[in-house]
Image 1 (cartoon, rainbow, N blue to C red):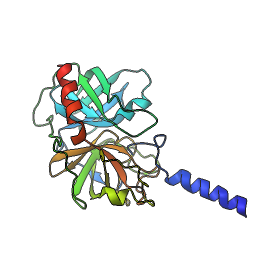
Image 2 (image 1 turned 45 degrees about the vertical axis):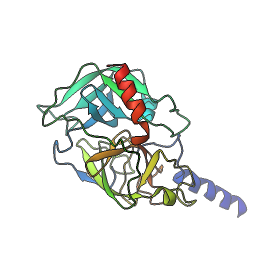
Image 3 (image 1 turned 90 degrees about the vertical axis):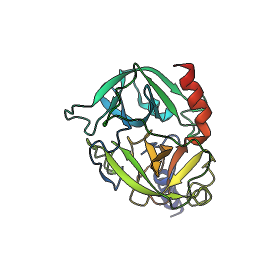
Length: 257
């Protein structure tokens, strides 16, 4: 009996743990977006396959998550903008080549710290109703607990791995860092550079990594990680805040302009 109990505990911890080795970034429980209502959204792709989300912060720059590079296989990396459907023909969507992929120097496959990726496109994009820049937070203040925010993406929409072709979004309530760091949740692993949002049957999921969490019209953070089982209320989603990294973002873009 003691041996059986040990195996049950190991399996439980394996299912509900959060680590750099889990399916990071992980939309579950959301709905399809109104087409082109979120014109800042980007799909990061390799050889035509969606890998991660991102968002346009300047005419030639997309911000995403560094861990998205872990799944690349030296194929052709491109960024799709102006899209609602990944597969259907749409007059304003276009694939852009990539000049540079610049992960934050403090990021690593072994940690969820500093999980930012700047993507410099080969050329400035043609801005219009379907392709627009979004403002990201530069003031280093925490989003108040229970603020209703939203996450959008083309990630999986169920824990069976069902994929979506059209952009989805979900509204999530912010969880304070102190509560998120309680032992039963993330046990102290959420730093001041991160924020948390609810995950009770509604969540970002695999393929949504790198996408934005938007509060009151401003991007506050980037989809980073969560439970290995999307929608697990005991493991709120973790998002890398943009405000602590404003200096790195602006200086990096300036040095490569």
